Image (cartoon, rainbow, N blue to C red; front, side, top):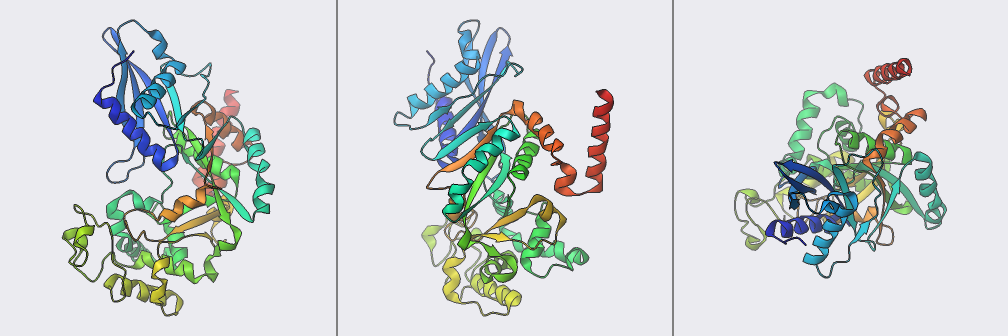
Length: 425
């Protein structure tokens, strides 16, 4: 038996924070040798206060000098984590996702995945063939329901959130950040006809953005999941399926709704009252906590609303209707103009996120609905041991850095690696 201590309670709290947000969590285990003792350590993903997505917290699960070697195995680690969670959360409904220790896997490295099976369907894949078979098995059913299925590849433990919402300051300074870059380099944006096109251009150069990338191609989604995982060792890659009602999708050049949401990106983060992050709002004194705004009034006459209306009319020559204010917290799937090499190659499209009217520093709650079908997420997981193999399979199909990005530097790198591999062979 082991003793439950406060740090274990904190571990369970961090685990449940992830489970409540995403429906599953991947936990990394490792062994530390300290003098004559062994420590079994768990690393659990946790967001920092500024929203940074890839921070880990460490917890010592178990420590013994020579006894109970069973704890220091893949099965022992999973059993220990699961027992802790079940013990401290007696009414828990989470389950343990089965993972098999690989023959060539690091014997001092373990993985454990907990998930809510009613909220998430996790599928572990080991090859492109297996991945495509499972993806296309459900295509006819989705099309019959009038849905499109898109794909987003990332690290398994990262939250699905546009980069803008990872830091409070980026949200506050969004309009200034965008305006400065466009002002400093006007020639780079001279062919952009709308603010949406400017945002797409900025995003491809890693500007914090309220646009969330998707791809129509499952292979592109798989490529990005593996690329991110290679840069973050011992992390599972994940391809998240996005489900979209065809009737609700928009084309950037034909939608006032898109222009309404992108007008947010040119509007200063403020209202008619003094800056809420510098003091208590006289109208809603109970709605603010600490230094950060929790709610922003969007009533007629508000300076912030006036500016949104101005930016909207500037883009569209249409008068902004104050009755549209309740639509500012929408999220919309947008098909961009195919006038960008990267978008063409990546078969890209975006979710444009509006403003969360209750918590402006967070993405709108509607974003999560795109990644659920009948209330359940579908996520493909790639074990760290399989990532390099799948990347090689993708490269054989021509899905590599040059295909994705189209840069000359990337092509040279691909050719250099290909020739080096040939000579070594």
